[in-house]
Image (cartoon, rainbow, N blue to C red; front, side, top):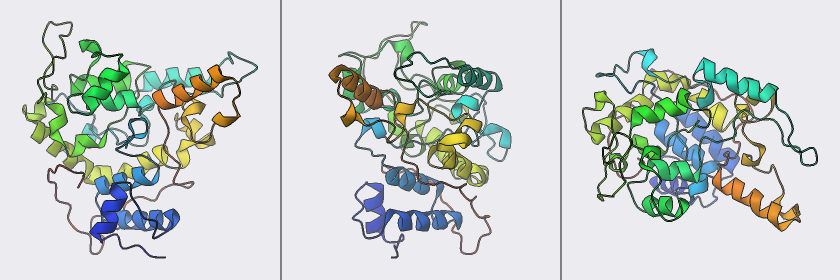
Length: 336
């Protein structure tokens, strides 16, 4: 069975989560991987396709597509994308970006004490997740239908202003080193849709501790106050040679062999067991209260994507790969 991934009909169906089944998922995944390795599709396209094949959907906040932070510098006046130091370490999960915080997660895992002997919980590094409905509405708060979804999740009102998405730099700081409860990754919109950074609907989001009313998201200095420029730089970073050389390592963590088992333990990448597909048979739980609690935790606290690869993902081929097209960065409404 072959799949023509140059056919716009087929690729748009895949990106929209409406694949018609003209090829097995295994064959499709193999062809996608090869096209990415040979630079026939962009990094963004590849991640969108992997998310779709792993069960992620723009129509489900609890299983929304997940994208990586690729930059680590959100405070400089200028951004040199040829400098490796401005990038995040894609071989490590967010919880391991900072060595000191990583040691605390390791300690939690090693010194885990079972709280309930009758219903044992497998040890884990993280009690929270890198993707959840709350995180999606956190980032996309300023756009509908995410505004309404956020208000619903918060019991009919906006969360306190100090807990809303107000600054890219502060959010990176929290997710990469500032809080043991925060290891969130990004949504795809960071790489193609500047609108979510602007308070285009003039929402009354309240005021933070400084007394300043929340409006547009505070951008890094290198964006020069422009949401378009911020997204353009983010997309350039995503398609850069540095990220192209290391993206397979992040794929191993999220969709691949470092998602489960000893490899996940070694990579500091173990989450609460209920976030993993097939970890519990909800239908077999007879206690209605326990069943409701389990379902609520699965829906609200994050779900790990379906595992797509059980072996190390091969790296992308060199830019000189024969026939490799030059990736052009452009802004578009849809994930182009």
